[in-house]
Image (tube, rainbow, N blue to C red; front, side, top):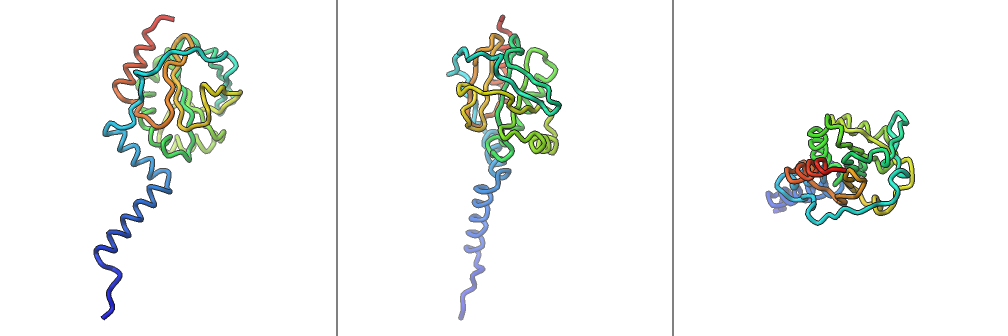
Length: 195
């Protein structure tokens, strides 16, 4: 008598392997798992270890939006700047997007807090299509100048927060939940600091 390969054990194993391969090779599936881990408290931004440091000349660091409007970090002195480098193919980037959007919505009307989400691939059309599909409304930019390694060394996602004096107050590499109450308080504290 021939044994069937469709035993309960084999089916469960095949489903487990299929799920594992999906998470391993499909960026949106991996992002979904990471997003779930963020919701339970993993991937918190570590703001307690951050020190304010003076970067290179901020006026030479520029970004351009889809309408070719150029924004210089030097022009944003006096504001808290949330700068995030990301890409549509990067699962950790996609995982943190809902939290970044919540943070953005919290401060969208605040003229003292500026958000710059920078597409590291330089393909604004593709990145904007992704943001539109997800109903994310934050501003999208491309790099329009050289970026010093102290700000972005190529690791995705990278998030930098500048204080009102243009100093780096936060430098995070990897996915994090930026909508956490602790991080929101951190942004409010930076905003309250005198220039």
